[in-house]
Amino acid sequence: MTSAYCTDIARLDHCAFASFLYATAVITTYTAYVSISNPKVKMRVSTVCSVLLSALASFATAAQPEHTVDIFAWPLSAAKPQALTKIGYNSTTATVKTYKTPLIAADEQIVRIGFFHPDSSTTWNGIATSASNLAPEKDKTLQILLNTDGVVYHVGFAAFDRLLASRGGAQKDGLSVEVVPMRAGPVVHMNRPVVLDAEGKLADKEPEKTFLQKYWWAIGIFLVLQLVMAGSKE
Image (tube, rainbow, N blue to C red; front, side):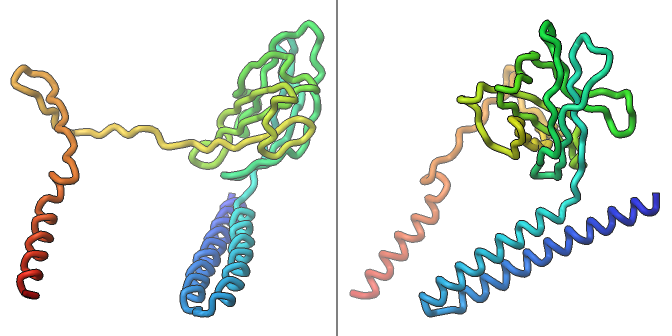
């Protein structure tokens, strides 16, 4: 337990150090870029700095800890699943480590695709798809859905005819993988007063003010200043 805790702390320190380097490089680059007056030198510095910043950004991404998950194909009539692919991923990217075309009976119609939770060898999470979607001539896309801790909690799957397939993501043997992080949903605002009209219904929202309605006073001050300045010149 202590070893794992120390490893996590080391990874956090590594990520924080990478972020610090990246921020320092950005500030230094901007300062140097602004202070240079020669256009040719400025262009060269801009090119070199762009390369360095790209390298630092790649380093910061690589500093993130990588997780792995084993994905299985489980025909509906089969007693147990068979290994389909091993995915390595972090919070932004994923790669297909291994992929094996599943052996599916000719009369099989439905195949489940999913994984077993790390804390339980019997807790299954996945989706069901047509067995034809796993055919070798299909291009397949596996989606890794991550929770707020950056750990996979669900998967998605889609298959396309090869001529129509999108070849985005890290692809191996017709399988590509995408990372889908969890996004914050709508937040409920508590203790807000409810405004009712005379009939006891929700009052209509006031229409948004126009530009003139918002800034008429500033325009008036500007016009007065113009008149005063014109009078002083005469």
